[in-house]
Length: 122
Image 1 (tube, one colour):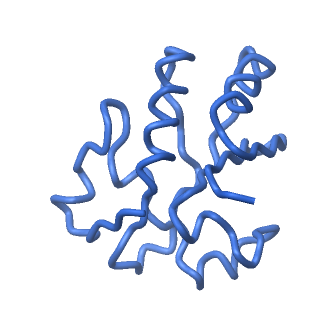
Image 2 (cartoon, rainbow, N blue to C red; image 1 turned 60 degrees about the horizontal axis):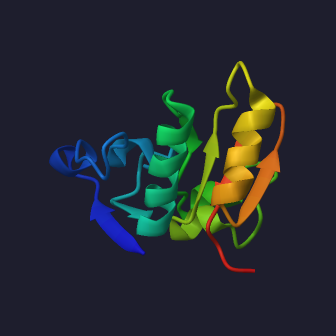
Image 3 (tube, rainbow, N blue to C red; image 1 turned 45 degrees about the vertical axis):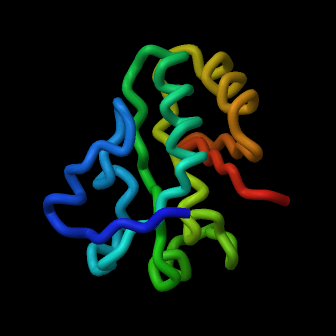
């Protein structure tokens, strides 16, 4: 895992061609660090290039407190180690998008509100 300080300069840092650090930041707004697994970022970049459309991260890194307050979150969520994100589902070709996710990520959960993907080891 790699951590970044949540300074304004770092939040605008490109982690890859299509993703900035601020997209992964904890939604609590209080954290001073953001954890992002380079493997997760690389696979998201591959997914972005496959679908040829922007991906929207609804939830990336979560601090322990924010994770505890997130309904439905696992106690030891991979979000807390920077190994998971929840993506906004695409409006078209959901089946193709999910198939690509299953090809690239270790675990995928599909709901109506989001698609959870992670690179955690089970």
